[in-house]
Image 1 (cartoon, rainbow, N blue to C red):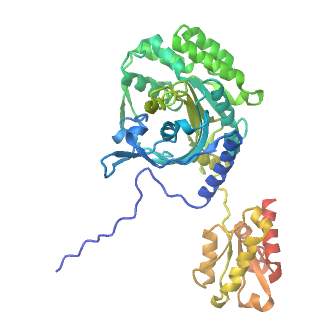
Image 2: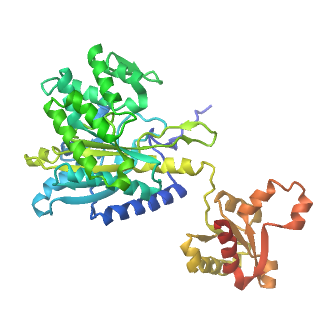
Length: 500
């Protein structure tokens, strides 16, 4: 008996840590990015687009997850044997752009950017290897004035995205104060750079892992829930106590009190004194209407190595739950800071720069959970095509709905079903598309000069309360026949009623 040949068909699958996205999520993201971009532009920032790939040496090795291959980036070698990598953020490409076009740019140079970034990190729930960022940066302006403006800009762009005042907080710290802590515990610039980085990465996880988890990372190491082990920084117990005390300072205090407290501890170190003065100046420049939204929090470290001064992070202040009522953690929805040394890698001279970044995917996920995981998102109005030789009439109906200015204002879409004349199949399609309304015009309706408007949302609601088929057929509560000329008016009436 002949052997059955193996199939060479590829298996349909998606790489780990990536995902497909469709429909409502993309529309919501597009709308949110439009509102955020409008805020950036109102502050005088111009858009900039850079390529997805940069030369690997131009990106630098700044990612926090150094245990991954290729230092956390996706790389390939070009035919000229130069290594290129997918960008891991939008800031490193900006530094390259500024260095390459430095003399032609007005300085300070203010730009915003929206785009995908890629990180070769361990994927997990809500943590993807490709995600969208929306950034704004000022290059050529020293601290603290540009940093204070960034804090205010952050509050406005987060609220434009859909959060209300009081539903988020911009947390503010300073890498120089961290340097002051290192000076105090004997981990100054002369210490091993890798040890300092390990300590900062551990500190950056304080809000997620708490004191116990960070103690392990600062000391012998920690095994996570999956069983993976992260090697610790190897600090002594006394040094760990000092770091934990530093991270815990400022909790439940106002900004001035926090700065006074940390000045008493680190004010005698050169770096600590400089960092405290910068934060004090930023705090004084925050307008009264935004002051409650920007708080000094020394547990904010930011994992990227290139930050040199003030750093920012945006966190939600309300709890999120999924459709089953289980708590959901999305982490911070934005971050940024000052990176005065990044352009220097290309120019050889220090160029001050500061920027903020919004984690669009996380923020969008949080907003969807806040609205309710079970909320119905309306699809297009579906025109059923029950007679193959009347397709021109059906397309004319859809065109009339699309052209109506009132329906366009509320974002109504309309389409003709193109998959065959079976009525049940067409209704099933409309249901899967989450259509709010189906328009029916078969032979009977056409003979009367009418169309039937079927309210699919109301129909679904009533089907859960009317158990008797005879009662349903007699009442027909979710559909109405009107004159063909009243098609647009009736669809508008049904949809506007839902809006109200």
